[in-house]
Amino acid sequence: MSDEPIRAEARPVDTVTIGVPTGEIPVVGSTSAVPDEIVINAEPRLPRRTLGVAALAVALLVVVGTAVAVGLATGAAYEAATIVAWLAIGASGVVVVAGLLAIAADRGRRWGVAAVLIGVAANPFLLRSILALFGEPATA
Image (cartoon, rainbow, N blue to C red):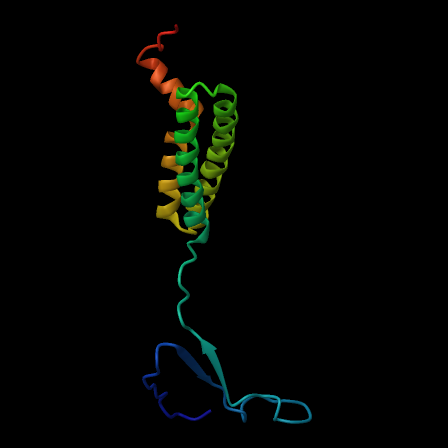
């Protein structure tokens, strides 16, 4: 080993170069198996937001489904309104689970929070239950 000081030089941010002197590592047979330098890509990856964004997109579809169900019920198409409402209830459950997964896995955390809030607020069953607290609708 030599007593020379270690010199450092500035490198670009996107790569890190580690120099490995070939003379200090004993290799049986040949020294060609040891590389002169190793280049590691240190470029930071962008965060993946697809789960949170997808959950929010489905949450917006739940809002549309709930609005369609209310519109159908207002027009006396109760059977169609019931089917659309049940689909919206199931989809809102999927949205809440996907939003919670996005929050936990940091895959679009803010989008996931928005998806959970919208998924809960747009759930037709919960919406009806909350509105029932303010008074039952009058029946004809």
